[in-house]
Length: 309
Image (cartoon, rainbow, N blue to C red):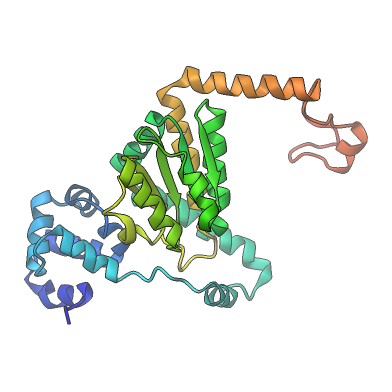
């Protein structure tokens, strides 16, 4: 049996330089990122040279970065039991009065880790794929479907053609049939790898359609078959769900795509607002009456009257 990455690190640790130690510490602490990052990105994160990364990989006994990535992927446990996750969360949630504070602090930690988890060049590659696509199909199952729908809706609102689906089985074939070489396929797959993912990837590869994967732990499952992998931070030890990081990532992608063609994006919103006004024949919002305002004063307002402006 091949020694694990952890065992290899322990065996050679005393022989490594200071730079090599920073590299193996990164491997040990971030196996998901190590399973997909380039030597350049690992070097940047570990604050060493590219050559130090390659030398350290060799010292660990690997033939190349590809072997290291597979060993890092083997450290991951992609299938998480929801019942067990809830049980673990409940052990941290015994004080209901502090629960909101705990989950908020965990959410802050998750948000701070997101920019480190998604390298700038990887993010820019995903933006380029979405911006160049004639149409985008976003696939998500279970709790990932709202993320897929959010990305699809956001793209349509900035004048891009997009759709989202959570269909499975042979019904999924109708969704895949819309893909063309000029399309983009986005898979939102945080934790679960299902057959539909493999079929979608195979079809996209067959026709030459670029693929973007958004995931937390499945990077090693798909990295060699997709153009771009956006890995969000681990939520295994945190109370919030992975939806927070994924929705933040979607917002960033939409803003970046909009920035590439701002007039097109603004025209899309102008059209949406014009149609909304025509549909409701006036303002979309129900006016706030003085009686309601008195019952629900806005924060910072001394009286029930909403502040001007």
